[in-house]
Image (tube, rainbow, N blue to C red; front, side, top):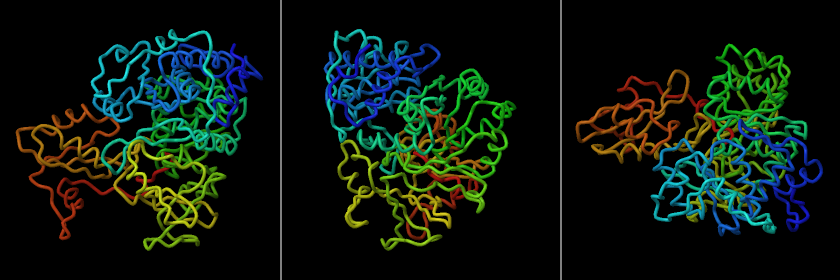
Length: 525
């Protein structure tokens, strides 16, 4: 096994803690999937070997390594190995259409795109102008030399980039430093009371930074991470089998996934299980669902967490209790240590009292470095003119503070929504629809889809095309989570008297209802 003392100076980053666990207790369980089961000593050996392979392939400080890997031990090893060499990892969704993956790769220009050993992408010719090398995980490992490279020490160095949809209408890379990464992970671990006995089941996909709230805090404290294929977990029986077979004590997922579990006849199995802690995030939680979860798992503490991607995983956690839900809302809690919340009214003035709604600005240790290759966009949201002496991130979220001192989400101030735990730009969906053949104009509006947030695409066509053909064509660019639930062909897009899109008229003509504000809550991003 590699001795951590041989890897250079220890720095204040997540990898330092993983190395420390390997040194103090190398046989302690670390990560396990359906193929492999590694102790901390074995994990560090693999990370050291892969970092040597990355270095041999030319990866160094500041380079990007894209991870086109499913939820797996291989993903964890590659992410940590990338940090070891001072590079930053860029998770890609293996379920995304090829065109979307290629667009992200073309934007971030990684030196390597690491794929699974069983993925065809490992050998396919790149279609992007940047032409990075696509290489299988096993081939990176085979490139290793006899020694691991020395780890650079730089807390402000970028650890990873998460591509997220936003108001620009196209994915943008959010750059997160090691300092912010460690602050977020450490705060979550302490607030949730995780320790080396924690056994975590990862549910959310690893290209979504909400998943980092279960994965990395567990590694931070030396606990065990259990990984099941994302597709298998769409069947609740796989979730409940893993809970029982692995003695899971902690798990986290979106409220949408909670609804899936609540509908399962196996939900009652949680009451007699080892689960002690459940964290929700990624979208709105309904009070009725929280109460149903308490009934199904009375022994478990339930937390809600909140945080835009730009503020690193989550910036607040709150334990949900009957008292916390007494007013009929699910609060997002109070900010982490080192994080500040500021509510600002529409005149740009601070709101200090309770009950008054304003826009939330976030400051402190967990702020992003910026957007990759988009300095102007970064300046638009990283503001130095709102709170004296601080740079703060403009969330676009409307909130208020309740009598308990917890912050409560109200609505979005822009047209970015959340569903299935994923942030979605309606502009990006509309742009994808409008790019299809025989389409001259398109827009997207949210509607009440049986109590859930639905997306309706209204399309003006200039050729013979059906709604079904348009939705199928959108699959070439959009992942399933972003596909419109309804596609309506219209003769024109109506305007209001102020020349704005008349969404009410579109929904009314289609017989659709507007969605309520709670469905648009943006808990952990």
